[in-house]
Image (tube, rainbow, N blue to C red; front, top):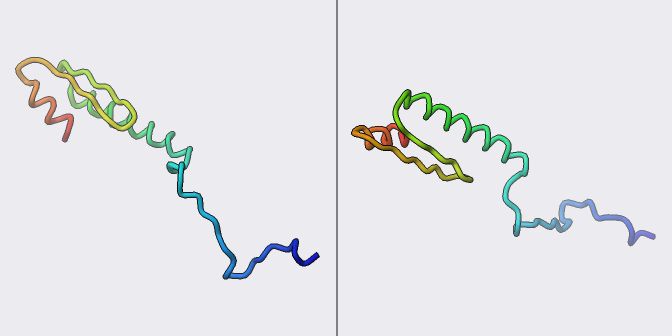
Length: 78
């Protein structure tokens, strides 16, 4: 009957799964909110400049055109 009791001593072995886990699932909600906020801030900074942006997972893709294209890209990266 004593064999069924779990060992709660400090020397008890603890198992930790370190394979196949990537953070907490609820963290994706907050990362999506942060990505959306950053995207909206970039759109706000660009005012009426021609610029397209795509956020996929954790990478941005920006496309610009016109005489101020490099300045717009530098502003977006900053």
